Length: 297
Ligand code: SAM
Image (tube, rainbow, N blue to C red; front, side):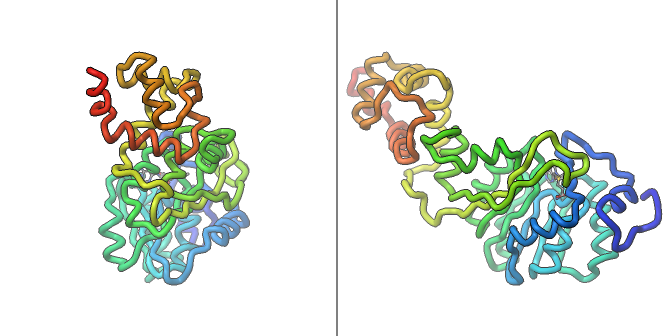
């Protein structure tokens, strides 16, 4: 630590105190604007009864206000410098709070253990490190039974894809995959100027309302990922060509299989609705190979 403890101090004062130079690799853009922090906390809408898991607390700009409201908060920080800083800061500013700091990569954390300890599913919160947004989302969906919901901040372009409608403008494989698991709503748009250092782009605060049941349940949700790799694998290619290439079929065989599913083989992956993607995923997962055997392959 470089200078006297700035008890009650600003984010910048605490970061300066700890001599923190932000690491781009860890997506370190710290929220330093107190007005925006208050607006974000209000938008997150944490309740007294909530058990919160925060990803990447940094200097604690969201963590401490969350810990003032929620009955239980776990904060998982990968950078030891920030883990030490926030441990010291919470001791100074919020002694006795129900805040548990964990020095760990979030991807290595099993939230099921924390949810069991809390006796309830967790509210997942995070101003996400942008470089690892996709792995974190995969981790979140793998453990989605441990979460009551999630409120995350992501880069605007990424957020736009997450909350697009499958088959509509801006739809991508990420859109379809998110829509299978959750309804995504935008809570706030956040400008770069409220962070230090400022990122290059705007950010979005999004809420994921997990479906109790997916709208079109699949025998195995993993089949959707496999199918999305096929239908979005070659973006400028028609679905018939994508399926033929991926499954090593002739163009005619792929066309016939897609027509059996009432999906026009001339369409492109990004035009399919969620229901059509699920129909395709179920067919591929259930083993078109079995069907193909009847085609003498
Ligand atoms: N929550 C703070 C805020 O809003 O100011 C910091 C947000 S900053 C965008 C992302 C934070 O995630 C950093 O503190 C960074 O060190 C941390 N981080 C990066 N990768 C991580 C990982 N794999 N697991 C846990 N924390 C991580």
